[in-house]
Amino acid sequence: MEARLANILSNYQGKREEVIPLLQAVQNEYSYLPQDAMLEIADFTHVPNSQIYAVATFYAQFRFKPRGENHVMVCRGTACHVSGAARVLEDVEEALGIKEGETTEDLQHSLETVACIGACSLAPCVMINKKVEAKLDKKKVQALFGKGE
Ligand code: FES
Image 1 (cartoon, protein in one colour):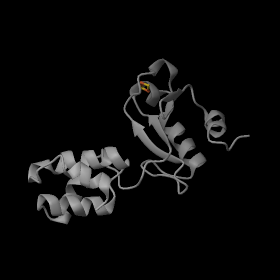
Image 2: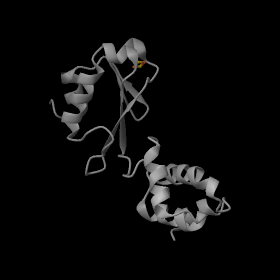
Image 3: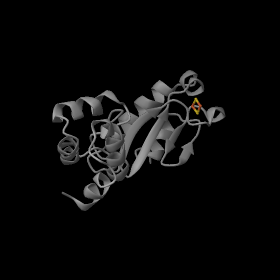
């Protein structure tokens, strides 16, 4: 077992009710839930693999692929929605060649949507890592992801 995972497990007792906290701890460490780690959690908590997987897929917070180096969050809050968030999401998906919830093959970008990033006056907007990109249109999206120059 990998040291990072062993270290995480050492903070728990292997109880059934620790499955979700364990999944959260693993995702915090790896940015996603590696298959091997899920198997180790199953062993550790004596919960069948299928149940671990069922729990992990039930909660939207869990990811099964690594997060990209640049985490792109398209805002779908009310202000952004009325300003064209759906179109922005389509443009970002097209520029990156991935769909919401996916990561590019080179692991450079991952794409998610969020409820509101707290910059409603700048709608429609996107957050890339911790930086807000404001008042997006197709041209700005293409420029941001290197397809418009
Ligand atoms: S609704 Fe998009 S930042 Fe608030």
